[in-house]
Image 1 (cartoon, rainbow, N blue to C red):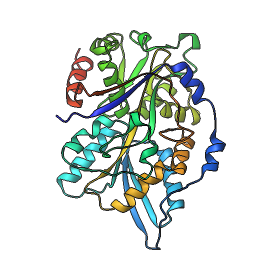
Image 2 (cartoon, helix red, strand yellow):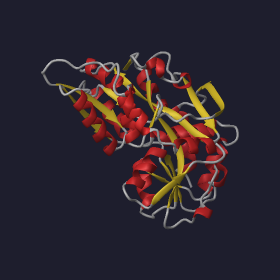
Image 3 (cartoon, rainbow, N blue to C red):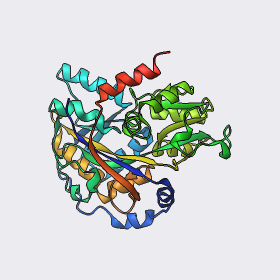
Image 4 (cartoon, rainbow, N blue to C red):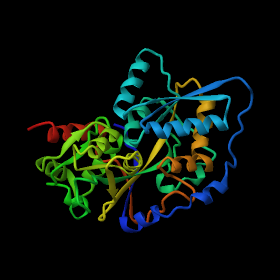
Length: 339
């Protein structure tokens, strides 16, 4: 099993929440799109992206990218990470891979593709601007956005005084749901981080199960369950909770006050893609000043630039992943899928 290094950022949340709330959006607009590659020629080209990002975020990215590069059409397939890998596997077996780029939340899920040499290295012109703790020095994965896990709650059914403020308060909380790590990369990564943290471990997941915690499908569906009042509380990425709130759902969220779990979501260039030149242009665009501003506009934390959250690091742990994805899922299923 391939061992890769992952950066786990564990930080106090109080300062992080304050900094996230400071808007410097206008400053970012002034930075423009310096150093972006210039798209030339009138012939219509294309690039195909497989991603777990939300539909409204993708609509914005597509519109802005095609406005900047009018001769390149961006097509995308949007689904949870589990469905995406099923689609990639089927296309690879029939030698009909359509994707040029893969962009999902969970960096662990790329391991099998890397083992099978299905990802091609690419060093973006903006690579040096990526914070060192998130950078892949082999340039197989290009970090583009930051994901932070939050506690999302139904604003009509849960009083503020009853909202858990720490991970330690979640076991035993009635009405808690989690996204199934089979279909949600963000859930897989965050739960795996908790298991590998000595303060939590596998016993923490066992306590969640014993306390009545239920599983939902992807992060979007999990947020919907909370917004509709079918669940009281969920652990989901901050951008998913923010989007649901902006859409008018009865949902809000808090950052855990004991620790913050955050990681970089990478984009990868597929080795058998048919539009590599256009794919590299897209990667550079998303890491550019303009691309990072677009992510911010879509409610996503950028990885670089003045809009990227400045997390006050309590400690930075750089280590080899202790548990493979398959090992984690076997143990997880033994806990949650057995009576």
